[in-house]
Length: 509
Image (cartoon, rainbow, N blue to C red; front, side, top):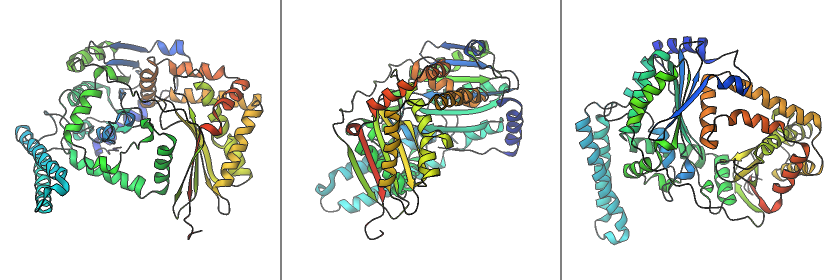
């Protein structure tokens, strides 16, 4: 993820905008009132826009949600979806280059150098005498071509332009199920966003691609290969999923990353960055009629292409517990996951309630039992949508044992609470507290343009209707104690369970 800072002038403009307008204390708290401020439309090419009017301050938050994530990475090219987060603000043929005709030739030279290098690598042992020397020479030629193309890139031009216009919160992110791009601007600069955002989807240039590929490779090295819990999570996923791509690391396998090419990125872009596969939210001081006019003028230029196929691979039914142990001289850790259905399941609200009951902060059973009372764990919790929820995934539990206690003790304590959930109805006070917390959480979501833009986009992307943001609260309010017990009994069983331990190696013990 890229977190960018602003120039002094930009920071001042952003601070004023934030102070005046990104928070709205008088936000309506029910759907009927909220709907009065929302309009939406779909362009002829399928791109859907949601406009939320909030005229309390001259600022607007802009959010692009692409329904493409790590789950969509082609086999053998893991990490490709994540690469687009890193390529987000590189510009187009019109912005981001010192001399685009020359840069275009230089980028073509990079492609040719890479192709020659790949051909020699593919020869392998059959390359005969001189194979190693040719590899070294072609690797140097490839790096020289990359450096030459890099000298022609104005890589900070895109961000500099929007920073000088008062942008704040410029960022991008990739999850298992989606990739998002967002920032906020003074409302009188909204057309700049329409131009820049549409340009990078209309005429993207994958400049500095191999530089960013190296950044992602280093990210993997830091977050996974040099991080014991990162290793544990990766091993856990590959254990829990035998067929579905949820079992692959979002950052990508090292060997895949090292071989990703611009051609791979271009093919992926054409397949998944389709207008009908994206949702845009404009929240703040915006006129819906002008937004529509600008959308048609700029985003209407994007070609209409077929939607990409969904993931067809279905994870086979698990027929018994799976366990894995990773050795590391570090803080022990335990992960426990139970298979569960996707976000489209009718019981999705029940899983949310269970999550709040078991791991809702300091009032959650896991914290009170494992951390506060028995002091078995430094931290303990869980959540119902790991690594994503577009497809069937996992309800995940975790704990980090305190000194003198073990991962096995913590695992047993987790099961004790789960069995309690299955055997006894949740008391009315706990259930009411969970529902009250969810009501408060919705109110907080309605208080911030940028956060609300994200919620509207994700709910439309997942359910085809932004109103699910409000329907979710109604669904949670209808959950009963018997629903909680029924779902716990159905899904929290040993047959569908996967467990991963992070433990000290024998000599460290």
